[in-house]
Image (tube, rainbow, N blue to C red; front, side, top):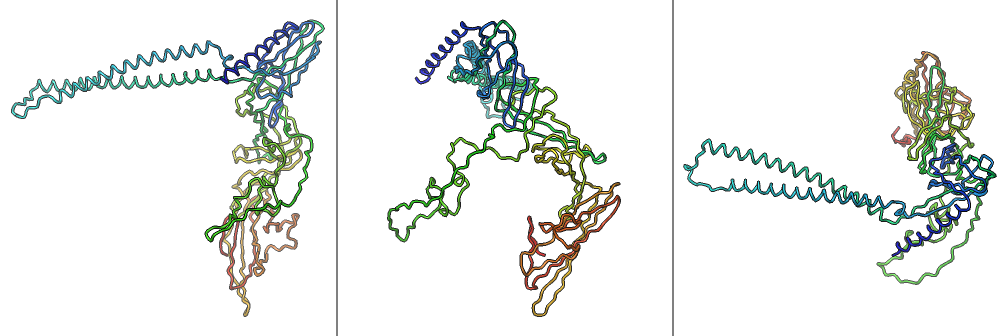
Length: 588
């Protein structure tokens, strides 16, 4: 009943819209255009949406004309539509109309008739196959019955009467051959029929679902753009329609290619464009923008947070027996109670940040951003509405890196090559995934952080086997001193050998651990290297804030050096020292 009433109201609205359109058509000539078929001039893709500009030419007559652009995207922001014209005519009004159509009316009656005819054919075919299936099953039953009668024939108890002559044997063999042949034929035919009946049933189910979907009264929303144009005479005018669509975005992606012999670094900057706005962008001039229009440019207002004592509520008196206890569980506290300092031992972030905001307001994701930049793509590209990422080339950036090595032999006996480079290009690099290649060999995948022009960044290039690192076994020995107050001193000696097998000199940074005492009675003394100032980054040997000893080492071609770390640990003889690490614990 409700659906019938809704359809009646919908039909009345459509009649009024048709009457209004007819009156307008009498007042001034009207022309219609389909938005997806209009020429795409430019598309500016933002990080969360896109601005599309389409163009078309129209011949207008003297006086007032109306141009209708139909089939606008369902993802369009109707408040963002702008229309510009080039010619002698003047645009007097631009409006967006929204129409509601019943999809039953959109679908033609001929489609329903075709589905019904298809269903009738499938039913007839199913009936024929079912009849054939019944006949074959009866034949199989008769054949089985005949075989049973042969087996259950009269049995003679006198064995002397059984004559196995050649004729009886041939008859028996002939019967077996006939039974096998006929049974196989019937079984094969029944198997084929069952498969075909199953296929027809699936087709009937699909047609039935389509018929049910067509009977559903779904309202479809259609948007149209109306442009009123005043022209002094008959002429041809070119129009440009710009609008914002959602369901579109782009993300950066990089290939970093390093050539060690030439000391060059190339960044292949790509844009991955993805959109499902409902319209294709064919042969469009693309621009990629780093702006985020959804983040407003106005500073938000900060509310005042006020604190007060929670009103004391009178609680009903209740007596308890020895088996009863008052409920003191935090989980039974009032879920809607306001936030009060000291009222709870645990306060959720939700209660701390509660504001008078609507429930559907979603806080935007906060990411490190850099200055807004627009990238113009040189070649025209086609981006279909398929929600699949399509790659376009943004730029190829040539940079001059500085190569340096770093090793942590306690963790790995390898020298890791790193490229330190300044972004001397005018391009801002957004944060995104990157593939790293060294001398055309794939090294790894990594995440590149946001890099502004003239900003330095570092990328790891993997292990260089030409630089040998040998972390020698740790050597330690103990000394005991004191008569009354005995203490134990352990001397640790660690040697690291490194060799440069390359044909050129290198600079390498080496790090190793110096234990940190967390007890007053445990004393750690660095013996070698000798440091006058600990945390001085200008010194070739230093102690950083993590209590790691750092060495800046220059290795010439084919040169070998030994690096010594020596320290002592003193503690009471009655105590055992425990050494804890990030991922493991062991005893010294």
